Every structure is written in structure tokens, then in C-alpha cells.
Image (cartoon, rainbow, N blue to C red):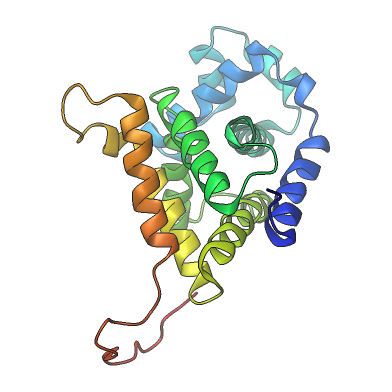
Length: 233
């Protein structure tokens, strides 16, 4: 069964984004550099990220690092965030069925998102870094705008899926609910019963995400309570 146009268009936007990236340039050496940037940024703060310090972390000369990132620290951080999202999108695409139903696509999103989060202990550092920027405002505006664009690509896709599952009501809130739950995959995996198989973890996460996707702002009694003041979308 073919998915409906909205999720197909949102997924095509992610594919178009990836096609515009120079993925072939992401060598193992560059990956090690950018992994080190994430680890240092979260452990020591963005002020702890220096070209000399990162060069030492990956055992290369600072001059060699500048030859890869001529824009210095700003370019290094921006490229690290770009690379991390490229890897994330690729993980999602690998897990998706060909032409699946909205429910099958959501299952693929769950599997791909968890795959990415669990593939290495530093994978969740990205979201921690973005959250720290909200408080510290240390990323450049250009880098922040690039992050917003990439997050919007994923949000649009998940929002399209939940809309196809349960209509438009609270679609953005439901999509963010799914995404934020999956961002905690490492924490989730640490609190399931001992001996839990990966497929059981995926099924549990899918059940939770389906419940979020189907949630609507109506109580069973029809009494929805007081309206929120100043709620933001």
C-alpha cells in the first residue's frame, strides 16, 4: 500500500537534502574529528572546543585540522552538527519500508531513531548540545538556522505520519511527543527488564509512539478542563 502524499513529500524533502550533501567527503578521519567535537562540547562546554584541543584529541597537528576546516572553530562546529544530522537521516532511511503505510513508516522511524541513539554512547550528545545552546546561546546564528532547518525536515515527516494516522488535531504536539520520546532511547534501554531483546524494546517504543500519535485533546467525559494560557507550538 502506498503512503499518502503528505508523508511522501516530507520524506522526499529529506532525501533531497541528503542528495545535496557531499556524503562521500565524510572520511573516517573526519568522523573521528567530529565525534571528538561533540564529546568535548558536551563535557566541557562550547568554550572547551578549540582547534588545538580537538587536534590533540584525535592525535593530529593543529595545522592539519585547519586544512580540513579553514573557517576554524565555527566551521568545525557547524560541520559537526551537519554530519551528525546526515548520519541520523541515513539511519531513518535505512529502517523505512518501501511504500509503507503510515503505521509501517512510524515503525521504521522508531527502529531507525533507536538504532542511531544506541549505535554509540555519544550519539545522544547532539541533543544535549542543542539544549545547552538554548540556555547559553553559543552557536552562531548561521549554524543555529541550519540546525532549525534540519530539525524541521524531521518534524515535518513525523508530523505527516501522525496526521495520516489520526488527523490534524495537535499534530505538531504529537509529532514532538514521538520525537522527544525516541530521543531518550538510551535512557529507555537502561530501564527495561534484564534480558529484554532489541525487538521487544522496539515493539514497546512503537506502542508508546502509536499512543502518542493517536492522542487527541479530548477527555473521555468530554470535559477538557481549563484552557492553557500562553501555550506555544
